[in-house]
Image (tube, rainbow over all chains, first blue to last red; front, side, top):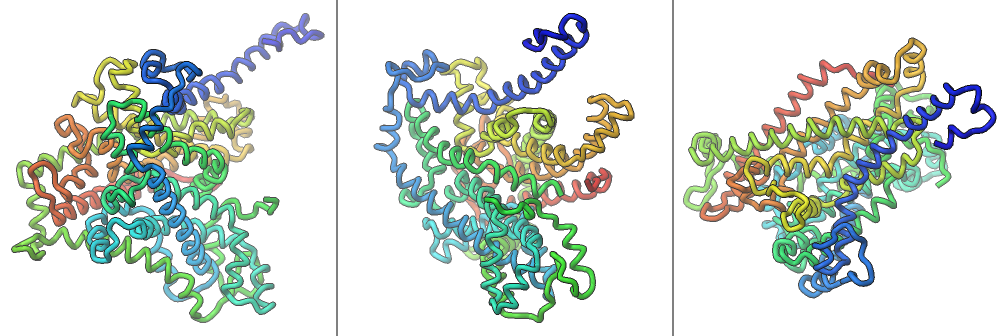
Length: 294
Length: 323
């Protein structure tokens, strides 16, 4: 709109003015479409979070209104924490997720370093063997996994979950990190070796150089684990080892009609990953794109 | 933070080429020392390989094996392909199985036909060089993908519930609409993945290509369909095969919204829920680990068939270009 009123040239060139108006409108169209889809993508989440802080009456009468002091009601959150042990579920999910990510990053980077750095008989087989797991969903082995866990006495233990998730995360981690390790200049490693560094020392020296890869794999491993329902449902149904996702699912089943509590528990369960994603979104997007471009 | 960004993009193909070349004399960046077998190689690889083997490969093979066994007098006995014959010939079982297969294919078809066009549109808009606020849009559009399926299922259940009254028809309650509604919820959640993958291809297209098209007199529309779209096509294939694999072992959403019985009247039953019910039992039917393994093996075969179809039916025919 303001483009039309650029003074000096306005009179003699109506065509130019109309064209610039048109380009402006043209430039606005992508924003209109993108904003519309932002509403579709984030609107439902905003609706849930907003209403979690409102009184029951306000939830039903004016769902689109922001919570005001008069409609503010934290009763839902109270119900969540008094009727279920959510602080414990959070702790469990946290232990499982952090434990798995740490193991995947450490063991995955070690294997990837070796595959990128050394040449040995059977390297193709080892690489392929580890890569097969990227395409095959681990869920198909559930019968065998449950059987194994029963034999190892790891049912209803967080360690069992961590081991399964680590096995699930390793194939992609090794695959992606190998590509990252191959990019590290050889001079650096050779210099360290000439100075008498052991191969283990070289690994720790190179590790910081693949930080972008580690960050991407970290975020990529974390999300499906925190959000998984299948394995907690089957391997750790016990109250003391329950994860947030399973806890939420069971709580929702029990309190279907208590909308305050339902909205509160949805908000609580969604926020940690939401916050983490917003902080790490750059790394995450990079992790997704780097694997796909080439 | 200020490190040079040499390692931003892994380039597997380039480094592979150097591996094949002769003895690494020149100390180029990808040249690797030729060393004899050493223990540290084992120390580096063994832990990852061990966990992967024990907790993924072994249970998978064990499940495949169990599908050939059946309990006889309390002991698992080898029965050959009896379980599969039973699954495909028993009236009740085969009806449930084919119903789940069909529903699963519909579930996938909805993903395929909805997420590709929308994902492509969003990616094309995001990749426009003049767009402002790209990073913010990208993050916001990706947010649903980071949520747990349990949360997504319930959010939508609340929003389309008659209590709130935004939607009048009980979309999840009718057998004609339940499955498609659930599939659309899933699309809503995962649209970020095709979007980001298409976006990655679009931003990697060199400007010279589009400029050359413009010089030749092609408009924006022609440039998109004639230059960019053929470059995106291989990614459509990758996205589709990844979605297919994910859909074929989907479970969480249906279980959260409709329970293990995947109602109404099994209208939303897919392979994942069928597997769960067969393995753990439901109502009067007893759970069976061997029949569960049989259903899992069928899922494996369906996934394999889809992946092979992709490799031979799509990937070989669609040309991909190195940019």
